[in-house]
Image (tube, rainbow, N blue to C red; front, side):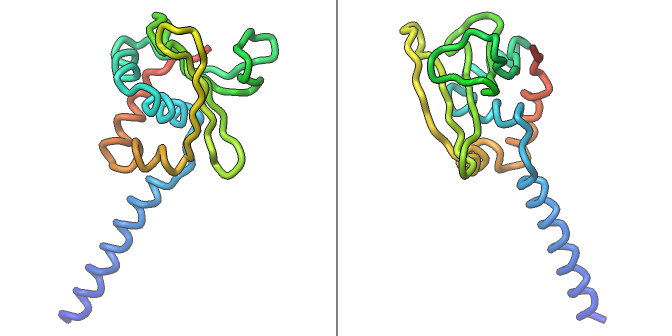
Amino acid sequence: MRKIKLAILTILLVLTSSSTVGAAQRQLTDQQLGILVSLAVDSRWVRQEAASQSLVYGVVHPADQVPTGVTDDDSYIVARDGRAPAIVYYRVGVNQHVQVTYPTAGKGRLRTADFTVKQLRRRFFRTAAQRKRVNAYVGSLQTE
């Protein structure tokens, strides 16, 4: 009887931990990825803009005027109030590498950064609290 109870507890533990891992490993939406990228660029900016409901998600279209290096179908997160960094462009490339382009504060030049989706997940989307916070930021996004 004791062995059966132990076996049942072990199975429940495995099922519980695998469902938690499964939730963390699900495919990210483009909006979630945008928040993760934006947090990597300037987490304080994301917190402030999300609190004021001024973050906007969009995708670059062929008719849009964008800086050199930004391509059609790049996604972006922008703040309606114009605070630096103001806009973060990103796209996922080969092997889940994310290329990020954003302006430097007050200088008008563009910076680029590269991350992997795995790095962003590990840094900003690992714990249940982090996932909840990111999803709250995503929920506050407006779309263009």
